Image 1 (spheres, rainbow, N blue to C red):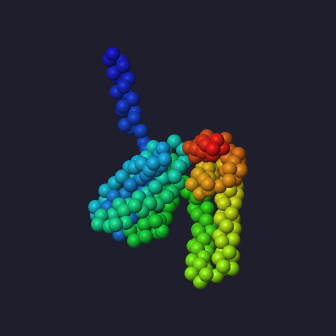
Image 2 (image 1 turned 45 degrees about the horizontal axis):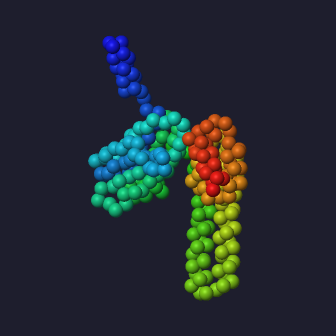
Image 3 (image 1 turned 60 degrees about the horizontal axis):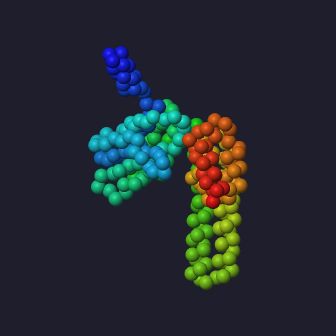
Length: 231
């Protein structure tokens, strides 16, 4: 019994002494008081992994266990503000990720320095933002066409919107296939084009390298495709 008790004590000591897989640190310029949360998705819900209340200093450090690279959220809950659900999305790997931003533009001003997956994700966002901006322009044009009851403009605009969506989806498929050795590929399939044709999702899934297929998002994409095909 003494040996068994000693064994469990050693397990506790080892567990307590384990360094975190991920450290997220940085500062929020202009923040005087508020709570910064580190979050991630788990079982279709967003859970809080770690948090820190700041009162004066704007520097923060948050920690998490991490088995493989995945997307996290950095959320700011500002005191005396209605804007309490602002989230920065970033891709993290083991080690340190540094996020510096401002209180005024928490998401837009975020500068993230960390994993190679984050760099790839940022490359993707640079292009996809142009698609989103074009989409907003077309929506505005559609509103104006309907307001003036211009059937020709309405039809042309609807066609342009359809073509833009198809072009955007094809870009995402090609981006994922060209980066089949990154966890970002299945993540984009699940978050950006989950409602795409099965053949496009299959194209991404079949291109993934074995390590990525065995990752969190690789397994999730495989399971999601199985559900889609059974419907």
